[in-house]
Image 1 (cartoon, rainbow over the protein chains, first blue to last red):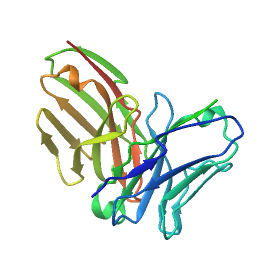
Image 2 (cartoon, rainbow over the protein chains, first blue to last red; image 1 turned 120 degrees about the vertical axis):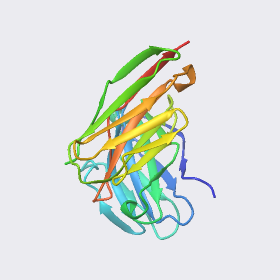
Image 3 (tube, rainbow over the protein chains, first blue to last red; image 1 turned 90 degrees about the vertical axis):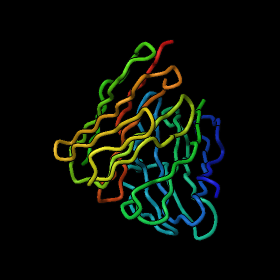
Length: 116
Length: 111
């Protein structure tokens, strides 16, 4: 059973370009969480999704950022018109049910975005 | 809003020392608390998970305790080794399915 798969692992973009980060949850998992880790900081919650639904996006910046988790395929975190401050590691986590039912989230290796 | 604080932010010790990392959280209504290890440029490795009804968990040289009422957890590392050098993250899961992380403790164990 493969773990949470994120790609790309490393992404370089110039200011103004778009970044798309993908997350394939563990098999059988229908809940996905995205976290951002700025350099030398802890992980900050961004968004919590179930298949085809955004459950909680309270940590998502209001502009330029969007996330989806379609019925088929991976979850996508999209950052439009990237700026240097978007440079960070973006982690995805998944759980089979609500995290409070299972008690545990499983994390991917992260996608590291560098904005030049 | 849950806030998680880790002290110290950084720690450097000689090999062989026993050490304690601290984690505090503001809202005691949690489901569980988890300690992670993160190596530079890498992902998260789960070390220990303590359910809200538990007081502690042990794995090898690691022992984590939880005092939910006071909003505190400690991670005890016995006989530290250079391979223990990493950032240690504490995270609490609350009723909103929200996992909130502390800022981490960067540990350096010198040979």
